[in-house]
Image (cartoon, rainbow, N blue to C red; front, side, top):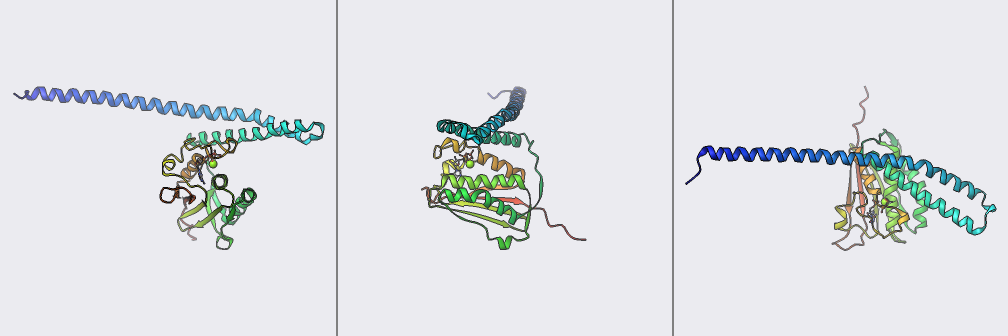
Length: 275
Ligand SMILES: Nc1ncnc2c1ncn2[C@@H]1O[C@H](COP(=O)(O)OP(=O)(O)OP(=O)(O)O)[C@@H](O)[C@H]1O
Ligand SMILES: [Mg+2]
């Protein structure tokens, strides 16, 4: 015998009340987790900021000692050199943490303005070519002719940081004798940059987590060569520009060895119409 309609309605009502209570509990839990995440990021930003001051002073004193190196015995020079080198990598890490937390908190202000692409490429080349050559890599740079007089609306400092990060990854992970290629292409409504290399590539398993902080840290390079924050910062900066970063080439048929290629696309405002 089926239950009377009134009882059925009561059951449905009770189920609804339970569901509603569960929904409210989950919403409260979500708000609590979001707040915890914000507090964590905020804490990280403050601590990173406060760590920079004493560290800058340690670096300054190490440099002073290095400038008076004749006063020290050979071994002592090595110790000061080690203090300086390690303090510099600690400072780089703190700066990365500060950038990432500021980006996550939406506190990193962007200053987009027209930037001459030929100058951006020249600066990138000056900053990275010596280390690329030292690493035994051949680099192909964009042809300056089509870029002459062309500009893109970007935050110059931050996009430079993005490009340096990607070129530096190509340098770190590509064995000697390999190649690195940089392309810079202004399109009508977007700006495209690509950085490719002939290194080991990135596996499908690694690809899914690629832009998460620390997620892909490998021991392929010495720990002093990075901690695994670079791509997370790169993606956050590109996101803030309303753009995208994609891994275009990773490994051929699942076997590594074909290198990888990152493509960045940044939307551009329509050209101003002259009256
Ligand atoms: N060009 C590349 N070729 C091969 N693997 C790469 C390349 N770029 C990134 N990866 C892989 O992705 C991981 C994450 O890169 P990411 O730039 O975030 O960190 P990192 O270079 O290890 O350290 P950091 O950038 O903080 O100095 C790397 O550790 C490496 O395993
Ligand atoms: Mg990196």
